[in-house]
Amino acid sequence: MIHKLAELTEKAKQKPQRRIAVAAAEDESVLKSLKAAMQDGLVSPILIGHKSEIEKLAELVDFDLSQVEIIHNDNGAHESAKIAVSVIKKGGADILMKGLVSTGDLLKAVLDKENGLRKAAILSHMAFFESPYYHKLLCVTDAAMNIAPDFDTKVHILNNAVEACHKLGITEPKVAVVAAVEIVNPKMEATVHAALLKEMNIKKQLQGCIVDGPFAIDIAVDKEAAAHKGIVSEVAGDSDIILVPDIEAGNIFYKALNFLGGAVCAAVITGAAVPIVLTSRSDSETSKMLSIALAAAIH
Image (cartoon, rainbow, N blue to C red; front, side, top):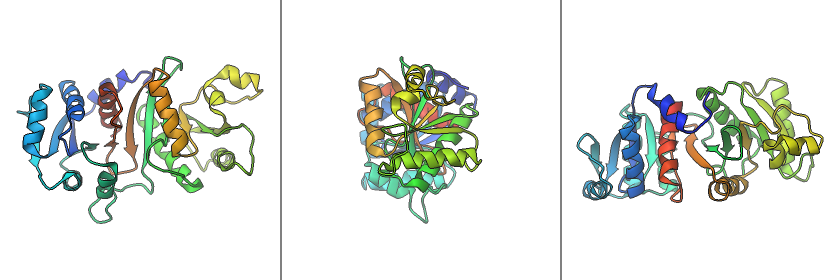
């Protein structure tokens, strides 16, 4: 079981070096993160995009490309995404990474019915946070993929996160299904979903985890807050996974942790045949490099 994000690097090193296909690799910050990951021996990159632009940017960040495969494409980022997916489909790479391509174009290639990489029913985003104010890693899902997930979608999102935790050695992750309040209110869908997910877990329909909720976020991460409100739960104050009600709540929480809470994160999209590193432009280089390490560690 890992306790710090830095341990992702060591866990990834215990596995064979992963090949990472980068769609539209002509992106300076992406190349910087790949350079760091390659120096740590985590990945072997395959860069897809405009070769001269990639080489120009690599020179700017002092990234030696002599041992790196480049697949030239000058037909646009959407075509680079298709090529990257094709490389993975043929067994040429183990991880997909977003470069200078829109999320929509990348996911369109991933979800293509004939040539894509869909494996599970639902793709979902998960971010593992290391916060100075929390005693262990905290997984937040879904902050970037599913806009307003219905109940069935939340079941898939939860299972995707639990599977990733298992691969990191968190054998029975504690899942807090968060909402605005701790009581079930039929007018607040998130609370109803939380109660149903908890019931499914009790009846062993959701396995490999402990699910509780609805919890407000303070209850999920703070034992004193839980005690003050009279809530007794294995999950309260000791959550491994925060299942948010929708993308707005998840995105706000994600960015608040990063920009106000002093946290560092690593994030991937799961549910495809391979992990997808899909970082935000505002994510730090450290976060991008750790996201590559996370993808390598869970694949």
